[in-house]
Image (cartoon, rainbow, N blue to C red; front, side, top):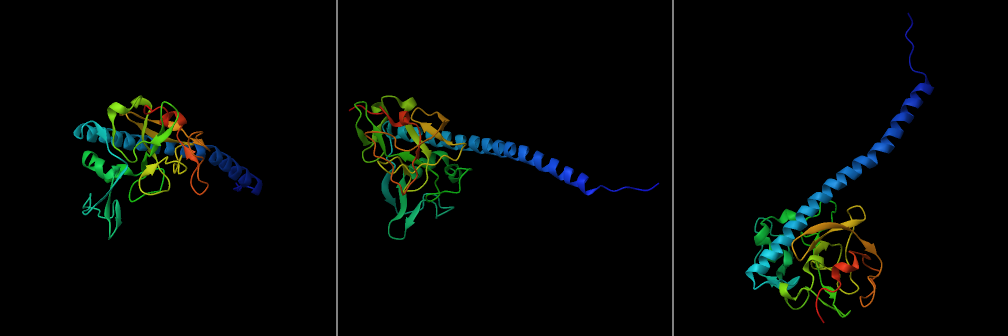
Length: 232
């Protein structure tokens, strides 16, 4: 009995079927992988948000500013490059430095969906907000904000995804410096301790907020996360 091999047409049909299946399944696998990364990022920001609230409990119910200068020694001696500025200034005294004693892990400052890091940190605190009367003012930039000043802590952004700018801030006037690596959105931690995924917008936040600087990202969390936060 003579054995018959596959014809060229049959091989091409098999290859075409495999290519079609790959085209269908690969996006599904990619979405599943990103969903897992999003869950990991959500856990990171949940921990960091709760860490900042624990900090506030130890400091007269007040949240730290996103940046308060420098410290002369490494906040994380096991990795002295973490949050390092330079030989003259030393290490940043930013919100990650303040929250580190409460989370005790520098890995939670990294987003699994992004290679971006600002001195070991992939997240930022909003520098500005819109008051109840519609004015743009500093939020976690400048003076210390007490929890009692926040009009709606469950809707006030505390930390989110950062891309660009220095050090670890987001949403400072025209410098939005955000990213949306999780299916066109990002994780947002709020001032009441909860965190969730939100679809990000692209373009101006709207008056009185400045339009985004074209040299930086125009992505940002929804306007309501930084609107009506403080009385004025």
